[in-house]
Length: 113
Image (tube, rainbow, N blue to C red):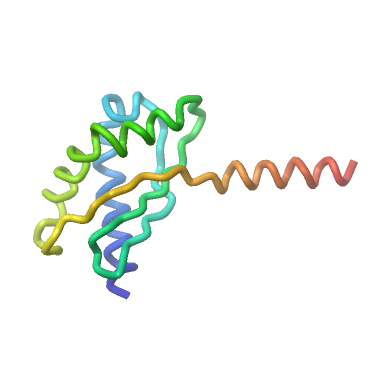
């Protein structure tokens, strides 16, 4: 229960952080956070991003997991410092469920033809 509440709060806070730094960190790409998975000890976060209309998806993920990660954690720490003892480690992943849905729709269209 606590993990779910924490995940929702993190999703909201990270969404604000990423939108504030969209031009510098995300090279202007439209990104939404589709899901946040929190470890039981609240020490690790898996953040799943939907990257829309963007050719360099992997570059954005590499940038967020690499040089910018420390800055993201710092900004998150400012927002949640009163709620946790330790600021969680963050890993960003691509949420590819929309691609999967499109692929399945295409298969069903071919089957129906």
